[in-house]
Amino acid sequence: MLRTARQVRLGTELRRLREAAGLKAREVAGLISSTSAQMSQVEAGFAGASEERVRRLAAHYACADEALVDALVAMATDRTQGWWEEFRGILPPVFLDVAELEHHATFLHEVVITHVPGLLQTPDYARAVFGYMVPELPDSELRPRVEHRLKRRAVIERDAPAAYETLVHEAALRIRVGDRAVSRAQLHRLLDESEREHVTVRVIPFDTDHFAGASAAMMHVGGPMPRLDTVLRDSPNGTAFLDARSQLERFRTLFRKVEQASLDPHRTRDFIHHLAKEL
Image (cartoon, rainbow, N blue to C red; front, side, top):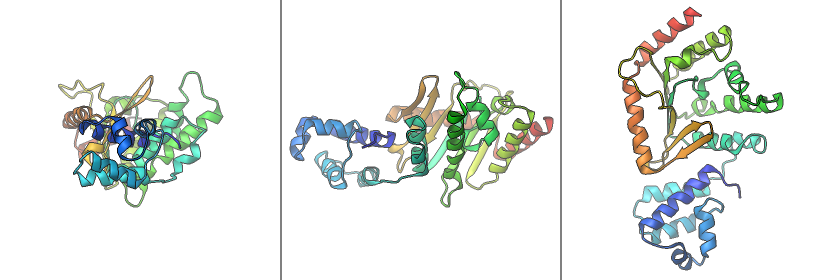
């Protein structure tokens, strides 16, 4: 089976339950007529688990959290073949993992410092971002990246969209990744998207006092319950998926701090209107 970030997360949660119960993999394998190797494959995300097996494991681990068990069963049995599957073998797996994670999100909280949020980018803006990569991408690589980025918008455009709040630093609005026309169109796109009932855009101006959150860029993706949230952080070495409880709590707090430094949605709209008029 394909080893996706969602499958890895299921295995991680099952391992955490086992360790909390004080059991070794070989002990559990004997209880469910399996092997240590098979248990390791499941916990590493290389093998799936049926609903029956997930529930049996939860019972052996004395997990009384029915909501958590139901959520893990859903992760184990959901075989959704989403739009992102058309990019398998074309784009790096992390692109598909991000799209799948967003598809299942209950909410999305994002902080961006130097670029407009990917979910709200125009085609020309996205093309300029990917076109700046080194080494330069051939058109056959560039086109699917742009197409994938635009299709990610499904999470905020579908019939039951996820609530999305993004905190955007003024730097991201002023940096011209393309030309003046691209920047102007991108600002108008932000204004249009902020009209959606479930989309909140807030700006952190340059002149905000006591803001030391320039390294706070992240996306916090809500799971079916807080324990199953995930934080994504990009770096030059790739995208990290963070899900330890201490990490999640840290980034929840960080998001609240950045949010407190941002303008409210109404003032944000006025701010973006003013920037657009300057171009």
